[in-house]
Length: 346
Image (cartoon, rainbow, N blue to C red):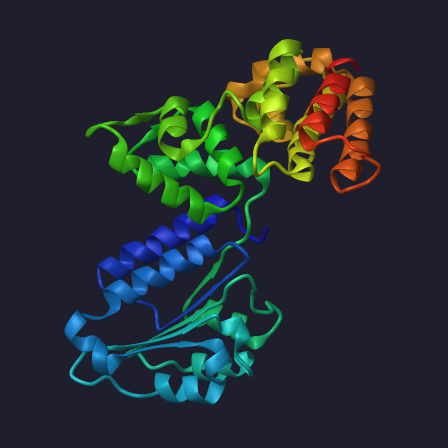
């Protein structure tokens, strides 16, 4: 990603803070695969740029599929009526014909106009004029998708911003549930906050289970833990439960298991080179919170490099089966239990 998520988060919070104070740039280019920050900044600008009474005459919100560069530039070059400024927002700007032509306006934007160019799931070409011009004359937010291993850390940061402290296992559980969908994490968190006792600061895994509606006992997160510990009875019980769930998808389960065992494999390779790596080296290789180091210390003993490679080969086989290949009459639950049993016996 062009920028780390911490840098992107800091920039967006600065823009939002400025917007609440009435401080605006003449043009914003909001783009990237992850919509959370694009929506966050766009909503803050719309909410704070104009008073309610000024919006009828001075706010234009349009969609890229419905406009072209000429119509947007014409709107941006108008002067405000009975207000200090006007706001022009182009949502889904990646759909607009002639998007790059907006660079002509952005070279000399009106001080009385705030132009917001918001793209979802796409970005402007950084080699071309629009991106370069807005970078000089305004603000660019490039919101890239987080990697799986970054989500729990993002959750901890997000909760800190909400005045909360979330336990590492709770952050991991929520990350497993929501994946890399930051909007989903934010929505579930706000729903949970309404149900927590007033004054709650520390959020536990039990709080996540109770309020988000997921079970730590029967989740891939707990299955990987029990596999790490080679706790056969509990691992098989969890596998049977997960496989019987209505929304169970074998490829998704295999993907989560692959992520876990690939981390163990990398950790095992590291230990072959350096038997006592520093914690910062461990964190870089594993991509997990230090809270989980002890689990991986156990896992790497149970699954040294050769065994770990055998597990990954097995996962490849069951990924094929989960997509309909040579499964016979086996049910998804039976496949999941069978895979788990074979991993435990490696």
